[in-house]
Image 1 (cartoon, rainbow, N blue to C red):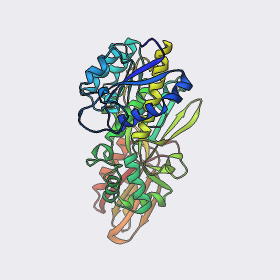
Image 2 (image 1 turned 120 degrees about the vertical axis):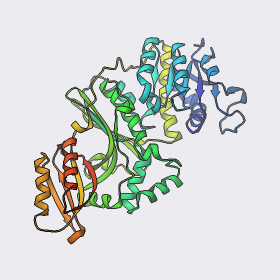
Image 3 (image 1 turned 30 degrees about the horizontal axis):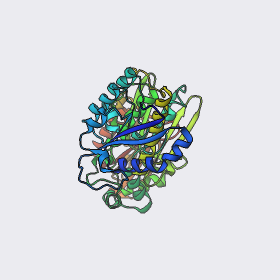
Image 4 (image 1 turned 180 degrees about the vertical axis):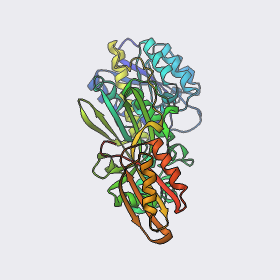
Length: 431
């Protein structure tokens, strides 16, 4: 640490988020100093390609292609990691923490897979590890979990944590677009990558869910613990059916504690129109938290993009710098407990089941009997079409996943059933 109240920053990565962060630090330096008494100064920036032109007001001498130089530089007080991926990010962050340097990261993949090792290293070194931008971009959510709600018994967190999929589902619901057309529009607008698998198949949301569950419940949860389904099989007809029933379809991240076990999952779900999450459109994100004392809270805003993510990183950076100058530490997550992860088959939910069946006497009773034999109670049923094209839509009361899966398998075997279509979980009435 320098002798005055200037904190020198080493940044690993200068892509979309890193360059936005550099501009923010330089533009807001006077304001930050006036409010906090701490001057932020960029010392070194590690990049892959030194010859590439960058729209940042820094001299060429600040840049290096050797990220380890930034970490080991004795003039660097705080390290910011925005390169992504697991390696070399993990090694660089570990080296910085062991050297007693606070670290700010936006790396959800890293924290969702090897977070325990990094958390424990920061705890042992007695320095800050801050990662607000790793979940929901610019939405301040991790800090409230770690600080304001540290004494709250949180029951459940559910939310929309991937802007790409929310944009796609909004277009499908409001414009009647197919999944592929909506995806193409998202790609043309820069919301989706050329390879959208991480977003549309739920991997991105699963990583964020693991981090949320770890902090909310003080448990060791990794991305592989999160049950995951994507949105690529959804159709415009599913959106229309949901609307007719008073719901909207969203890709939800859900983390909850059930009788000492942790249930973590990402999947499409039908959300009642009156629920706050139903109105979250386009590329926006939102997180809905339920706690014993605080009741219900919702956090809403832009979940991705260079600007919002850089804003969250800057907030963490200011906290780390203030703590460094004052010789203190911010809130920690403590020791993560070993809590069992509840298998998806044991989780209960309401369900929406679409099937096509022959419109013949006794068919409906036969199908309903299969539901009943498996302990799945039918809440409502709708029929559209006649003859071989009859479509039946069932909405169940709460049921175990295993019981619903067994029901669907047995119904599919009935001679009168032509096809089982979409099966979705339904959020509502405590589900």
